[in-house]
Length: 173
Image (cartoon, rainbow, N blue to C red; front, side, top):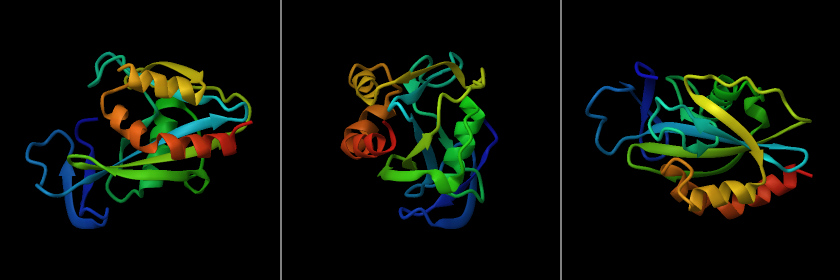
């Protein structure tokens, strides 16, 4: 959301002591902010995908719940907060397993996996998400390759796909 305050980090994700307000121009050159996401896997091996609201960038594209870390938050804390806000699924920051980090233009993107029991009830935030689906990971990868996921996800899943598949398989059925 516009107005969020982010820590500005160096290339290693270490906060510099500076902050940047989302939506403000002139993000500091050569600096980054943390963006984190969680691929949630149920016991049956299906993963949660959410579809971006029509009013957001990349409208109606699919993704895994994600968002920027707020000032003072760790990457894992941001990932679980975004998951709770966007889909109503609650897991602890100590329950997520890191898949990897990808350096993007102004962001350090961290992807995590979290296992959940049963079929958790979802509460979608209509300002963020218009639809959700539990799908096999292969379907998420297909959607990325077919251009049905938000554009940044294509590179992310190309990079993380094999490791993500290992972690999803080890946490699912």
